[in-house]
Image (cartoon, rainbow, N blue to C red):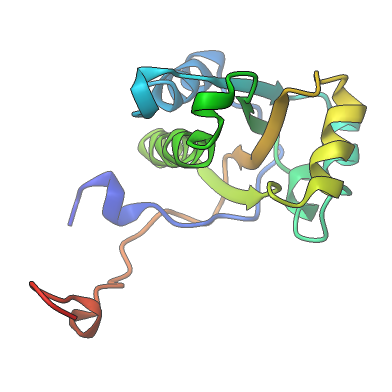
Length: 167
């Protein structure tokens, strides 16, 4: 089980060590390799490295405290201006978020996904603070960085939850 899918874990504690730009770019590229409805790719990624901005972002959800200690946060957002494709943005951004998390593990970094959408109060806080246009909806926030904790395999397979041809 050496595949990165099996090693990825939610890491919430980070070292005070910057993430190299080349690693960050590979992480962002991985997010944009995700599948999307009609190959529409309506994601936008906001990279937050400024300490004060990460501190503010960490207070926009009761579960986002780790963002203040992570050297990088990525806000995954979706452009909802196309009404026909708007209905699919949650699936598209979930795939984008997961690709980012997998590449974080591949880079031997730690990361953790925090959902902000569909809590519109939290979505609005991010939009207002970062001056994000109304049609661009913040979906998730990913804290990432180096950690003493490691991505390691934990078997979550449960055969009782697998059904073949009928429930």
